[in-house]
Amino acid sequence: MKIGDTDEDETSEEGEEVAKQTFYRKDFEKKFFSEPTNRTFCEALLKHALRDPVSGEMGKTLVFAVSQNHASKLTQILNELAGSMFPDKYQSNFAVQVTSQIPDAQQCTINFTNNNLLGSANFIETYKTCKARVCVTVGMMTTGYDCPDILNLALVRPIFSPSDFVQIKGRGTRKFSFLELLSDPELKGWVAEPHKKHFKLFDFFANCEYFEEKFNYDEVLQLPRPSEGGGGPYPPPPPPVGLHENTQDDLISTVHETAIGLDGMKIDRMFFEQFEEKLKEDPILKEQVEAERWEQAVEYVINHLFDKPAEYFNLEKLRKAAGVDRRLSLREILQKAFGFIPSFKSKDELLEEAFDQFVLDNKPEDASHIVAMKYFFKAYVTDGEIRQIIEDNRLTELNTHPGFSMADFRAVPPEWRNRIPEYVKDYVPLNQFM
Image (cartoon, rainbow, N blue to C red; front, side, top):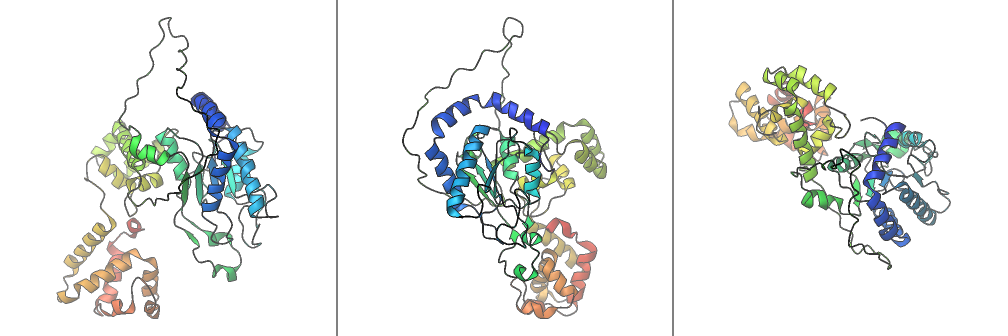
């Protein structure tokens, strides 16, 4: 991933939004986005957002608005609410509008990543995190923006492009250790959950349901026919019908939280299939794969198909979209796309295969200890902490280890306690289990 889009990209993207969202702006801003509605959205976000595990304040957040005007409204409301919730803490610096009409907007995206947007250390002096907690944008931080300590994303707009939705959702998927920002060694021991393991996506317009249940991924779009006059401007689209102006307060009747598992969402799976089709359409890559020149094929994909405009395919996104509980290699992805393998094996399937091969290679005479040996084998392969304990001979720590105990270790015959680690080091590629 890269940090931010260029100013030129933002200008063209905003310009494209003007063409695409004329109806959205008129409808949502003037009819749906009343002051009470905007305030309700912001209150729900502040109430339910994930908190920073070190400082306890609201985790860093990206909010995606309908337009620059809407972004300005949301920023103002968020700052007002933060002033009430955290008196004398932010002084209107809680939320920042980051759109193309704001001076130095591109620098703001960089500062947000580097944790010095409007200053830092608002709660804890030895903790380097932004004073600004929320960036409100339209399209500027949608693609190619890398800020791994983001904990919350809020969609305060409808999205109709699958690639846009995948890109926005991807802003929250980076892992991160918040201890990297804390310089006080004494405080580090007090942080209960220092590692980012999940993020929250606030979806106020049912975008998740739309792409999971209603979007037609198989639809073939028909291009408009040129006018009879020889290619003049196309007639304007018909005006929207059935508009309804709500003059009552909008209330959020329910808050429903859904955890997305390893299988991911439908849009993730479709994103992966879209990439597979792109691979198979490339004649150069097809030739390399058919000749099984895998290193050359992998290099070609990285240089010619990754991180291109529109889809912004890359290995990290494809791993998440594949919905596999382990680390995939690009070679495996190519092998599946071109039919060399029918599917991706799970972590446990690979572990079972690796242990079966270990048994074939070493032929233990006493089969009564196979179960204990397999448990040790799998724990050693998948748990870096256990590997380090075994390698450093710090076996007493197994007395309190939740994943592999001293009793589990003692159940392994002494002659295999060293042979299993040696075999794993020589024959089992650990990267795929990370």
